[in-house]
Length: 406
Image (tube, rainbow, N blue to C red; front, side, top):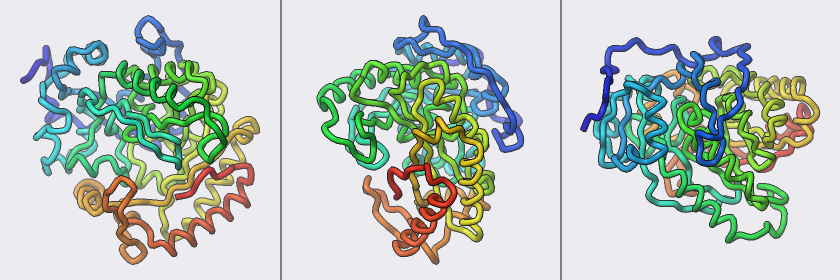
């Protein structure tokens, strides 16, 4: 059912410019203050960066697929109010949209679908899972999918031929579930690699909270909720610098993990993301705004001259980051994981990426923690490469503590 008021057919529109390296280098957007009246948790960022041309290059929604309950919810209504005139199509389930999922014709429109399509749904299963690596717990996320198009992303493996953002509009239920879970844990009994004092909850396992904030207050509501949880903190990784997040006042209860890799790899693999130097340059601003700031060295892609390029990146980190960032920083090191199905999808829209990602001579099949069958570097190759990377870290960034390497 089409509920659009004045929706124009997105087919035939010129492809928006990619949010690429040259377009964003040197940008220095100014954060804006939030308007508490517009958010259930007091963290809205009406106006500001989310309405800038730079943000619209990332997310220029032309059509919304939505479950009826999501459309009728307060969050769904708020999101649609920010998207006047878009075409709205009702669907029975955000997981089963024939024109998106399973439609192999969407491979050639991979980036356009991410730019122009948004899905609204209600998250039915609210489950917090133990993790123990990056975080103590994986919280039920406020979204699934992303407007960026990283060639190695694991989320599309479950979605077929399209992976736009799905926003979950029952944010009140998600926040209430997390609060109950945090209360049930009590104080953290002893330090671990996740955090010495607080239980860490990853709130962005299947999306990027910084990009979600361009169109939804879900991220703001979660950041605000964790302000009131003295025994816990939120955590999310991001490849997108959204200065609106600087106004959310996390008060040390949210950890932002900026993912970084050598710029040459990012230009090939991190499609539509903020440039790596911009992510690094944002670290001090986010720290000063009240976030804990860590780094994900992710993914580490093995290719000719990879050690040289990682050494240059680490040297850059050491050169530009101020002492206050270094004193609290830590890192996660994540080697590349790939997948046969994603390999086939990538061949349809970005085959050059597969020259770096698909290397059968040094990769082997392995079943992941979540049961998925993936391709990873052979164990001996992986261990040798991690040893070499740790040596580079000790030489160029001795201040950067590695919380875990995987």
